[in-house]
Each structure stands twice: as C-alpha cells, then as structure tokens.
Amino acid sequence: MKDLPDAEEVYLRYITEFDDRDLESLLLTYRDGLYLFLLGYVRNEEDAEELMVDTFAKLAVDKPAFEKRKNGSFKSWLYAIARNNALMHIRRHKMEAVPLEEGMISDADTPESALLKGEKSRMLYKALSALKAEYRRALMLFYIEGLTHEEIAQAMGLKPRQIYNLIDRGKKALKTTLKGMGIDDAGY
Image 1 (cartoon, one colour):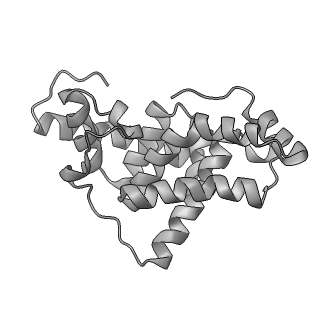
Image 2: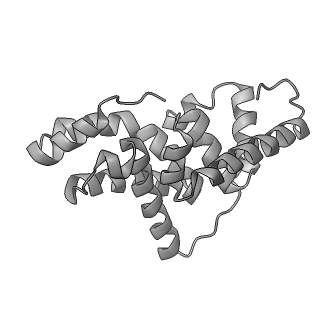
Image 3: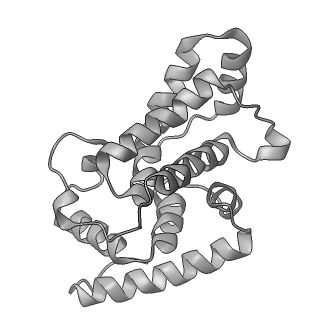
C-alpha cells in the first residue's frame, strides 16, 4: 500500500495550522489499509468502516500529540490508535473474534476488492482468514502495509521479538493452510 513519506509533518502541520486538506491527504493515504486492519479485529465491514472513520475523527477532534522519537513512524502510531479503538469497540459490544465468513468477500467496489481480484487472491484471503488473528494481523501489516517489525510491534502493542515469532509462525501456518487448499506453488 502507498505510504505518505512526510506523514508526520503533514499531521503536525494539521494540528498547528488546522488545514483540513492535510487531514484529507492522511485519510486518502491510510484509509484502505486501516480499514483492512480493523476488519481483522471486528470482522464486520460496517464496524470496520465506522472505526476507521472514528480513528480519523480522533485525529481531527482530539489532535493527539505525535513525537517521532517517542512514537516511531506515523503509520504505526495511527494503527495503534485504531487498534485501541477496535479493542474498546469489542469490549463495549462484548464481541468475540470469530472466523471470517466466506460470504464477507464482496465483489462490490470496496477497499478490499482491489486485494481480492482473481481466484488466487480470494484463496489467499480465505487462507489468511483461517489463521489465528495475531498471525493474520502481523502478516497483513508486514506484507500488505509494509511496516517494519518495530512498527508492527507498536501497532499491535507487542515487543519486536514477539512480532518476529508471529510472522514466522504465521508464514508456516499460512503455508500449511494453502497446501490444504491445494495451492502448492505459492511463493513464501
């Protein structure tokens, strides 16, 4: 997914100059990936969309402080805010993590539809959905969002060493799942 190279500066400019174009550029850059990340937590497209909007509303209204040295990258900081929103939503609604239903894969023009084009992509998404939630989140943040292990650790609230283990175990579990689905030629 495309990243905004100067996202920290754009956000800091937004909270000092109150230019809505800055917030809009952050929204346009991060909304799709954030939506998919949140979908992994709440398992409902409407809730994920609402939480994504709530995350940006928090930036717009609360204007939480961001310090590059303390918070790592802007993207990992943003994902940590989104994760906290998702966890609060899950607690509030006493939700349980449930496997992603096959029917949730939509052919409509939604952010995830770009990732689901073609049968192999559908199979990969289905295989990812069968993984433990922690594996799925770590793999998506690493391979799809392009975050570093340290950034994923911040976004998921874990230690970098735990992320290395999650990604390694997640890749092995994904390989096993894909083989069980008859896909032996996937690159790992």
